Picture (tube, rainbow, N blue to C red):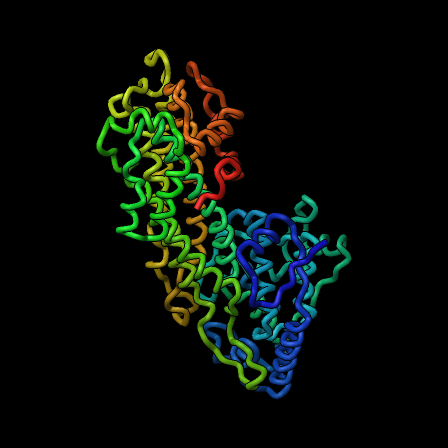
Length: 509
C-alpha cells in the first residue's frame, strides 16, 4: 500500500481528499521527525528550569498570568482538553474528521509546536486505523483556532469521549483496546499543541473547495443544456468579446460553452432568431467566471493554510525561544469561506433564473407550459422551480458573511474572533444547496431539449443528456418527481456528468 509522506510543507488539496475520502494512510517523514523531537526536548528543559512560558508554565487565555508549578504541567494539559471539549450539535461526517486529523498531523510534524513524537504517532495511528473521534460541529469562534472541536479530537487520544470505529459508535477507550492502542499521557505543551489552531475550519474548507471545482464545471454544462432548451444564440460566447475583458474565469467559461454546444443543430437553426438573450444565458461567462476566479483565489489561500503552523506559543528550538503570536486566528480562512459562500450562491442564483425561463411558456420560445404535455391536468416542472427558489433564497441568508461578526471571549483577552468555523460550515451548506439547484436545472433542461427533437444537441451537451436519460426518463405526464431529483443530485454529487462530458470532448477549462 502506498503511504502519503508528511513533512508539513508539501501537502496538496488532492492529498487531503485522498486521505479523507479514499482512506489513504500516512507516514511521517524521517527528516521532519527530528524537528519534532528537538522541539519536545526544548519544552521539557524549559519546564525543568521553571521558565515562564504561556500555556506551558502558565494558565490559558485570561489566566495567562497564573503560574503553574512544574509538577502540575502535565495535569494542566489534560485539564485543558477536558474543559475545552464541550461542543454541541451533530458530529462532523467522517471525511471532515479525517481531513481535520490529517491537517493536525501536518502542522505538528513541522516541529514548532512542542509535541512529543509519541503523542504525534498516536494521532497517526488513529488516522491509519480508522478511529474517528466524534467531533461536534458547533462551539468554535475561530479565534484561538478551533479550540473546542480540536479538544474533542485530542481527548480521544487519552481515551476520553466517543469515536466511530469499524462502523460502530463506541467509547474511545474501547476502540483503542480493539485496535491494540493505549491511552497516552500528555507532556508539557501537548494539549495546547493539539487543540490550538485553524485545523478544523481548514479541513471543512479544503473538502468544500475540492468539490466546488467540480460543481462549477457542472454549472457550465447545465447552462449549455439550458441554452439549447431555450434555443439560445451563441454570440455572447465569441472569444473576441472575452479577450477585451480577459478575466481568466470568464474566458474559461466561454470556452467551455463553445465546446459544449459545438455541432448543435438547435443552436445552428435558431442562431439568427435573436440578437441577444436574457442575462441568465448571455452573462454565463461573466457570472460563472467570477465565481471560478474566486475559487482560484481561495485555493491559493488554502494551499498556504494546510501547510502552516497555527498554534501558540510557537517553539523555536534553534533560537531557544517560545513566541506568543496570533497564527491561530482564523481570519484568512473566515474571509475565504465567506467569499466562497457568496461565489457559490451566485452559481445557484443564476441557475434558478434559467430554470424559471424554461418553465414559463412566455419566455421559453415555444416550450409547453411547465415543460409537460397537457399542462393544466399536468403541473409538470412547476414545483421543482419552487424548490430551486427555496434553496437559493436560503443561500442568500447563509451568504451573509460570518467574518464581519466578532464576539469577545475569555474575559476579553480574546477580544476579536474570526467566526471562521461557521464561515466554513455554512459555505459547505451553500455548496450542497447549489448542487441540488443544478440537479434541478439539468433535469429541467433535459426535459426541455426533448421538445426540440429531432434537432441534435452539441457534442458536450449530448454526452450530459445521455447520462441523465440513463437514470431519469422523459416525463410524459405528472409522476412522483422526488426520486428523479434525488437521482440527479447523486449524479451531480458524484461528478458523473462532468466525467461523461470530458470523456466526450476533453477536459473542461
